[in-house]
Length: 244
Ligand SMILES: CC(C)(COP(=O)(O)OP(=O)(O)OC[C@H]1O[C@@H](n2cnc3c(N)ncnc32)[C@H](O)[C@@H]1OP(=O)(O)O)[C@@H](O)C(=O)NCCC(=O)NCCS
Image (cartoon, rainbow, N blue to C red; front, side, top):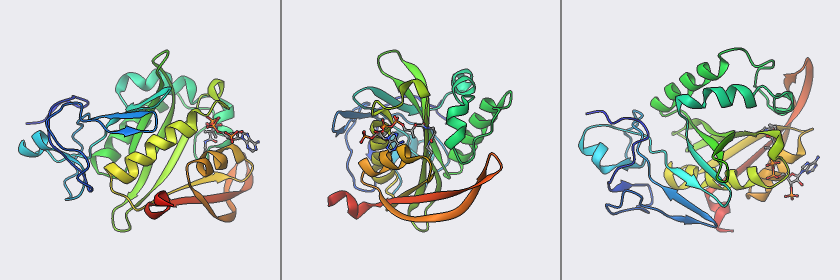
C-alpha cells in the first residue's frame, strides 16, 4: 500500500528521542512560537531511529518523515508540484542568485520542474529534504530551506536557504532556520548541521549566528561566482550546542 504524498493521518510517530507518541493525526510539539503538524510522506527511508509513521510502518512503507512547521509568520511544508511556477518566478531574482553558491542565473526555463524532480528523488533516497517557505498571512510561497547532503554515517547535513527579496530584513529566515534546525535535530536525529555562505554575504552568517551556529572557518577562494573566486565561510551547530 502506498500512501499519497502529503497525506495527514493518524499514527504513532517514532523519533530518535521518542518525543512524539499517540494517535493524534496532528501530534504536535511546540517551538518558541511554533507548532509542528505531522504529515506523512513516504520516501523510502527505513533506518531505525528515523521518524516513521506507525500506519505507514504497518503498511510496509518506509519513509523519511517530513512534518509541516508553523512559526509565528511562516509555514514550512513539503514541496508540491504546484510550487513550480512560484519557484521559477522567485528563484529568477538576480539578488538571490548573487549570493547563492550554486543557483543558476538566468534561471533556465523549466528549471523549477527539474528541481522538484531532483528533490523528490533525493528525498526518496533519504539524501535531502526541502521545505517550501510560505507566508501565513497570504499563503504565498516565498523561499526554500534545504536539509541536504544527509550523511547518516556521521549524522550530519548541510543547511541551505533563500528568501524572496521583498521579505529580507524582517527576521523571516531566522524564523525558518529555527524550524529547520528542529527538523534536523529532532526529526532526523542529526548531531551536526553546517552551512556555507560567501564572505561578502554577512546577512546569511547573521541568520546562522542568531540560531546558535558557530563560525568554524574561512575557505579561501572556495567557489567561483560570476567569474570571480569567492571566499566562503563555514558555520556549524552540533546537538550539544543547543543545551548551552
Ligand atoms: C541571507 C538571507 C536568507 C537573509 O534572510 P532575512 O530574512 O533577510 O534574514 P533575517 O532578517 O532573519 O536576518 C538577517 C540578519 O542579517 C543582518 N544583516 C543584513 N545585512 C547585513 C550586512 N550587510 N552586514 C551585517 N549584517 C547584516 C540583519 O540586520 C539581520 O540581523 P539582526 O536581526 O541581528 O538585525 C536573504 O537575504 C537571502 O535569501 N539572500 C539570498 C540568498 C542567500 O544568500 N542565501 C544564503 C546562502 S547560504
